[in-house]
Image 1 (cartoon, rainbow, N blue to C red):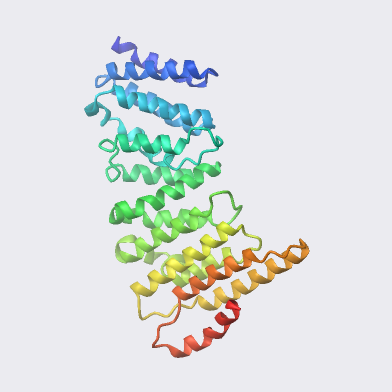
Image 2: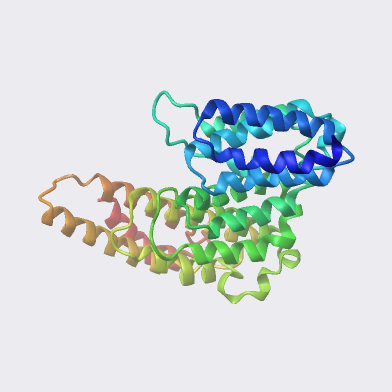
Length: 339
């Protein structure tokens, strides 16, 4: 039987495209039983089947596909012995970590896909060793950021954000590359969930600054310090007119985090981004006010939210008490914003 496992699993993998959910569930259960018998002598066959499941999550990638992939992985995890599963876990760990951030589109009474994967992750935490599979997870996150699906882009950004506080210094060798990819993601269309990108970028940059010499960011002029990153990259993005409120707010929040980190790490350096932030928020308020007039809308709530976000960011970059001249320069423009 063992010599035929590869053929059986390959045929069952094709059955993922069957229209009948009953048949799909039957195929998954059968495949899991074959995997149990096949391990460890036919590890390559089991790996090939698991890779088929992973690929099916992304292509076709619809809701039904993402649900059945979770069912298939769950069946394998429940039937194959733990010591054998650990030898093939690397093939599914990156997807499992991504899929926990699956933003369900199935409606009010539908099963939440992200919760399905999260429950499975927690049930098998002894197998899904995050630090041991860190490089694979980062690679998958960066691939997702470059995929055409907005869901996958958001999953990539959220996964990177989740990794930072858990793995910390283990991420340093990848920090510069991750920042580069995230910076490339800022321009262009604002898709649903893109607000994750600025926050993710801020988190990785802060980690890199805490370990400056080990993260290689000093070699990159565009983001070696807060003035470079905010003034050269974030301000350009903030100056785009008509940004969605959630995304716009996340840009201000990220700028505030970056400026605050810079002040803590290099307390003797005064940030030069306040002028840019003041100019930006002034132009945003004018644009939104004109838009409200054109739309015959009296609702000023969006301006209020954005001004509040901008003021918080400015406060995080505020000159130190010892620099009274700089404080005096900025306090009047900030007071004008508060009116």
